[in-house]
Image (cartoon, rainbow, N blue to C red; front, top):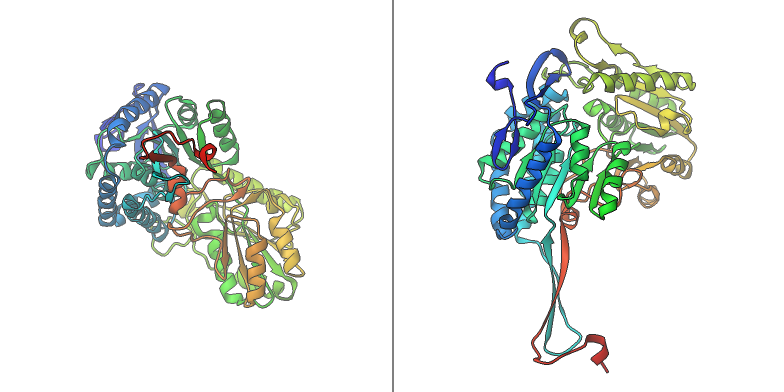
Length: 496
């Protein structure tokens, strides 16, 4: 193993191995012969060291003026911009998503960094008249302390940036535990923050698996946890935080629907269904894994959707002509294939795809054909459960009311979309779809960093990422009253 292949944790401003000296491999999901590097297989002691470093650093970092903190984040955005192409190539190699999407992932980190840099001068509170004379009232944001951040593999630079940048600009310190499938992209982001001069201990990163994430969630020195991942793990995070009343933000699954009405621009709707269903190989929490189509255009839509999907090129995302990359790991591929079998057993009509690609150039990767099921019953498991792969379930409907009812009849509530030329239908759906994100004449993916990101029901626990909402999560309000009357004023008691 060469020195360049061996990566380290980042604790207290220093790159260091795990206390155990153990490591795990990071391999390319398009070609498992390609070893990207070895990363620390960390222990609870590594988490303890990182939290201790973050705790020490917090005392000084919270006193750095917010505009000064923001200047470092702005410089990070500029460095990310300079290195965008290199980081995109590295991300494709370790995660599998195609190069253009990987570049978009890095761009989202750039966007979030620029946005949060601006918030250094905009952490506005309220000033308000007091109800008594010679008294002044205001509110200010205060940092929380050490933030534990647990990020997933599907957006390995964007999502860490969603968590790190608002946490830092609010004056918190952080311990990041990135997904073991995509540790290099997270390390690139942390290295940028080191390079621009973020003080030692303000940003820490500990690599490892679920046990390390669990140790971070249980650590009493961590004031807040921000987690993106599965519902099963999210429930464990909430349970770990509840006994100490520590706050947690959970961003979990989705079973997102595109509604295609009979007056839709069908070509545009097909574009949205292909992009929403098979972009990132369906490995997005906002993926359009259900398409609910009006009976009048159902046959024409299916023909166009299957024809467009048949033309998609599957392969190594490093090839610029490829449109759909591999799944991230063996177990993810097996899960997707098992859901395809479930769909067939349930009686859904497999129109295209459904098989693993494993000959020739596909032999050493985790490739599954983009798959479409037609005539899906809304109660089938493939229409209810998150598959997180290139599988789309097409469901017929009779009218808008039925489409909305079908779309809402799942446990998740992240994103939804409608394709229609009727403004009344668009606004009705906008109001009645129970989701945190909604699109009109666009697919279910494509959120922008200046608006809140998150969902309802089993998708989240009420918090949001991005935009102003991120500041609300990573800070808390302090209300301040200044009485300059020189006498005791007892608020409501002394009012006549």
